[in-house]
Length: 85
Image (cartoon, rainbow, N blue to C red):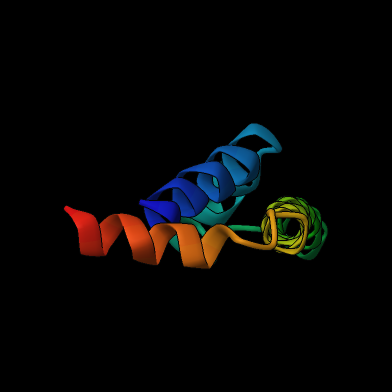
């Protein structure tokens, strides 16, 4: 579930910043684009991709922090519940 969520979030960030449309245009119309147009589209795509990576890195950092602050007896409590069920 986490992987699906991260792909959805990354895709939403890239699309929101115009990276998806820029990538689609770069892939389909690369023969007809001028150098300035190509550079602008590449910049837009990279900006969206960079933002998606930063958002995903932030979510990963939150996961690390959540793991570090969990209560000390958590694993023992889980093991006891599994055995008693």
